[in-house]
Image (cartoon, rainbow, N blue to C red; front, side, top):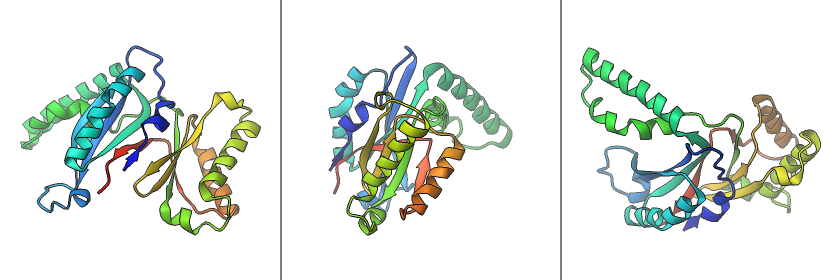
Length: 226
């Protein structure tokens, strides 16, 4: 079992009444062993989190759904806004209706009821708000230093934020989030593309593996395990 609720909680910020985060529960064919599933991944449920209180109150419900379906819960750490998502949803609805009328694509009209959930999965949140470094178990196990790969990366990031970005320690947070295939390092501030590329090169120069660095953060919240 992997439960990251407490690790994630400190990364949630609500600055506007329309702000929210999306928790999506996915069932994967390889987790269930059900070869009759039509898709490799099926989205079972989406929760919209509007406050820390809601996050706490929904925890048991998220766990129950995951356990009952051997599913995984992920959270997008980009803060979303109801108005922006609604405008994108309206545009997507118009597109699907047009496709259905012009190309007779069956299923597009049925999918309209799920547009809001679809949009949040690809709509960008607040720019430069969060950063994620995805580290595989293989890289962690094969790392040559006793200090550990995750700790060395966290130290490198912290030094950059303190020395190059001139931030105080209370202005950012770095934590590690367990996943089924390794670790996500979550950083509470964002980086532009140039800095991300510099980090890639820096890690390699220091004998660390080349890892995925992402600005669109979707990280594991809960997985019951097998």
